[in-house]
Length: 79
Image 1: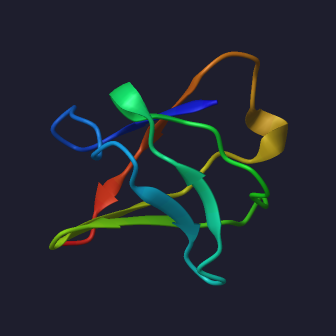
Image 2: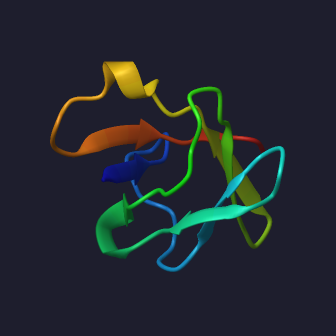
Image 3: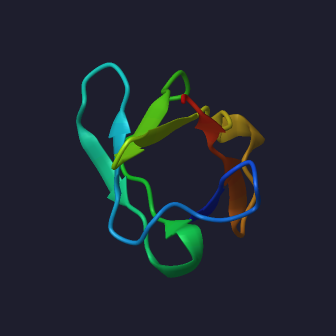
């Protein structure tokens, strides 16, 4: 489980798809408050989000660096 945060501290809009940058496969959806459950990510995955004229990317932590609980996932603007 993660929480996606934009540079200004806000969250992407509810319902936005989180996709693998290379395969374009949908790996999750943004829920209320930026919460996201991601399925099928690899250690070298880069994730993208697009809404309207905005987009950002996430470099998730390697699975070996994950702990239990919620992980903050900074989403870096591509605009």
